[in-house]
Image 1: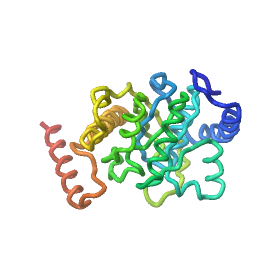
Image 2: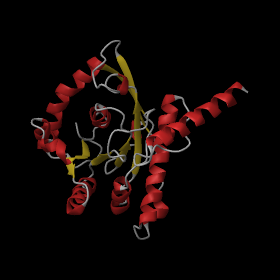
Image 3: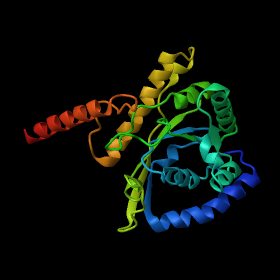
Image 4: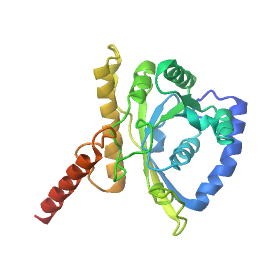
Length: 259
């Protein structure tokens, strides 16, 4: 199904097609899926996505696949050691991510190679499921920004909302009934042009990451029909203090609505 100018091998198309033949009917059974604005995804793009459920990779992968592109993720390296899961990840050309050291550099080089041949790379900038108690995007790592500035590839935010009702929360279990629905929405390319020409300093990476997360949060807010928090959740800060601040923020908003 690979089209849109991507240079995919026949073996890759067959592998993805085989996987899609099993995954897509299962998703259709579990979820009503709606895709919005997906035409903004082009070959050679970096997709940045929010992370709210363990189902997210399948939801995002399908939304890319139906556009005629083969989805490649930067995925945590331990996933490749899981029986069967690891075999599928390797067979479909997913890229293991090693945190720190030379492994991290090799992961970015592999991702850059995929982009160079017209493939699509999907990254969760947060690096893990959001720890925000209300499932908003939280503070992110700089990996997506680093890859974008290294390759000059366009960065497109693709966010979704709804599948966390099927699988999410604690304890983790599928909630099959009533049948759930999810909406996947792609935004426009994030403008990073002014950051691409100079050296890739820490301040430049932080600024690029901030822009990426603001765009994602704006789209999530649009999907949810809610105002996002004033500040993103910081996974390294004191949780109790952040919860107090969040509750105070909600209280102020309720008072404003009452006026």
